[in-house]
Length: 273
Image (cartoon, rainbow, N blue to C red; front, side):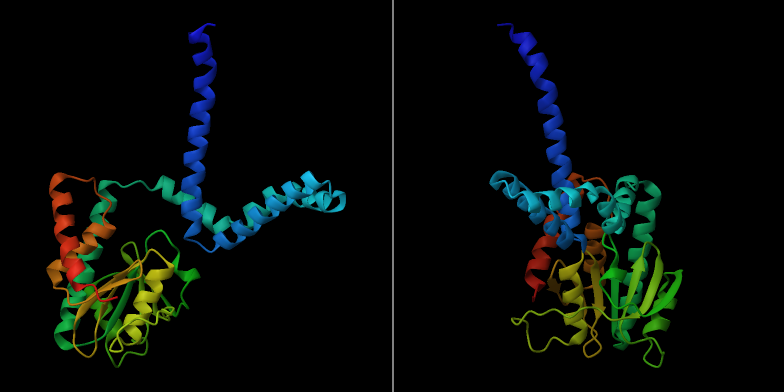
């Protein structure tokens, strides 16, 4: 048996299967964080029923399922249109220097805003949109669509302002919406002292990949929520470092890795939920 010929016939299928497996895995991980996950689960259930009806020779049910999957390509394009658009946009928006600069400027705007609001104990709730489209999860309030600046954010959260209640959504370097209603967490193990603003921050971070920054109206304390965890009592420097780690898609380095380890120790100490 010619070993070289066997390997020549084997390596192509191995490469194809590996690429398909990795691609399917990342697509599933992406869809799992979106509202299309329930639809995809339903399609997989129907696909399993198709296999069962084929094995058991259930002619009528099998025919109906075959007809359904005959139009599945059109159904996928319609049902998963938002997810496909975001996935393609994510593939096309690889980090570059201009994006990193924009992300750092947005972080500085948020840090300056919460620093000022914390000093005068004005409450704030700011969601930084990442891959997940927040307009599908929150009850959007007033469209703003303006440059994110400390002055604009302070104006929005000023107590006598008509749109100061609720949260703000920041997309890129712009304020998309104000006066938004974020979903409240349903967790029962939270401290009783946590108010609606903190529970809304946790709730949104549980359902999306957004980073939510907030200022307590009662104490002026600066906090942030991400992936269902709430970290309180941050300084402006700590918040700046944390946001840089979570948002800025810069290449990893030894210095950056060391800073992340130090931040993890700080976060562990100040995590309350």
